[in-house]
Image (cartoon, rainbow, N blue to C red):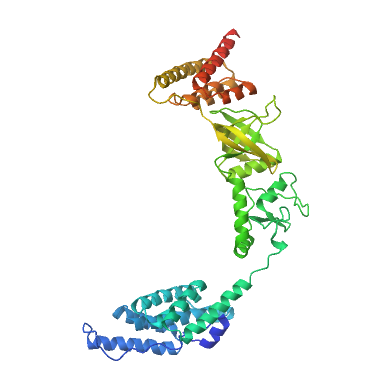
Length: 485
């Protein structure tokens, strides 16, 4: 494979340094008593053939000769250095070929990047064998630059200059790499309004480009579309949704690469809206829900649609609260629920199935993008210690209550209508173990209907014994009502 080396170098924008020639193999067999004279002579001829091919720019033939020589005498620094130089010159030649050259005279074989990678392996072997040789640093630096690992190449060049501060190839490489890195740093686009979202007026984060050609933050666009299904700028009707619309990867990569610090701030800001922390909950203000309940929700208000999208990108949990009719403000006690099913509907609504987890007391709350976020403290019943008589009595009461509830469920299912029977079957599947009296006590109260004020009262009670007693009373009262009917 022949080619004009000087022309290929200039067209690629990077000059290989220190590779004008290869090393001749010594005509001697000293220090190698294990190799016969005939075999050494054959090795010498193979290396000589490779050197001739290299000097005539037939680098593929040179590589083949040096590989044969390496098979005869592995890990010889001269053979590895010459093969490394051939890999580098061949890689550079292929990089510099024009499209027309490839059309009229196509080549087969390894690509430039693979050749540069093989050169790097040989350079590292030479460096290991001759760590004080400046030639190994030259070879490795050239390999890294061809692989576009300029920062690593700069480190290698600096290490090589410590071995020989007057090495012209390393000094030339240092000038070249410094200029390249300087051009990259100065070549970054200036920070301008072109990279801002016109809705939040901040750097675009997870940008989406609409069919009409405008780009917005993903969250900002869909928050706007919760109210109007149109482009916020040109008012074109948009038929896109969060599930089907992809982020503009190219634009996002440009922003992340050129404005890394501001991008990191935007990412942290977005993450803070999605992952609020263990003691913060977004609030859905509608009704009181007790632990061990399941509920279906139809989310249609724009503020709650935004909240649900953020929750689904985070831990899928929110708080359910109610406005206290006696005070007109949000009640002090609420319950955490987990979204177990989320079905986005074509008109932007969400159909949710939630399951309640644990109760909490709201310490304070505030508005965030139209919905409320609360700081909470988790509350539990005051239970007697393990091994005490009070604990034994509580477990005994829980076992009796569980047995009564199972009989009650069978009787209620026999006389209930289809809808009520389905509710009872669902509740039966959520029955906790009697070994967890607190959850069992809440489950008992979910078997019967209650007014919001009664549910709030049940949330506030911290006496498991009292809640079990009330649950049994509610069940007996409903059973008597059924019999009276």
